[in-house]
Length: 169
Image 1 (cartoon, rainbow, N blue to C red):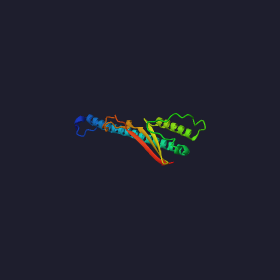
Image 2: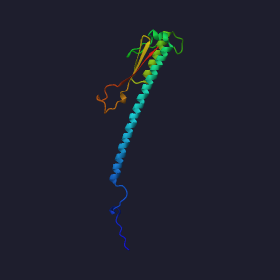
Image 3: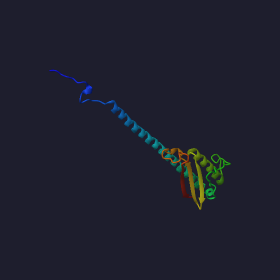
Image 4: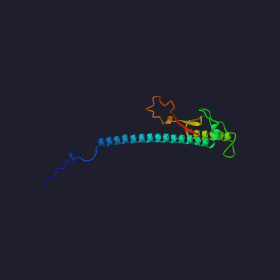
């Protein structure tokens, strides 16, 4: 009985992968991993954006709570603040000494402004009082969250976000 063995490459039922199949598999895997990396980057941008919104909310509630604690000065418009006009440095450090209502308002406003400019990028704020209703606006820059391929202006215009809160004192 004679056995004739064919070389493996000529065998009709060859097993294993060819180099082309491996290259195609690697290309598909690479595209999938790039997609996952893009999703991760988008998720991180969204997460940081949500963090900034949360901080803006906390800061707005902080100044409203300070105004409620010092209601007399708040109703006398001592907490008024306009965009682009940072509050002056207070004459007295009310954290270390007793203060009058107006002095406490100046200290609160300065301390609050320092907190949100340290927390939010390129931030500004506004506090308006009208008939006992206070409106607090916190504004910050989120240009870094821009997706360049979607931007029509090549990333030159800032993306400004605002949190606005109105409440009765």
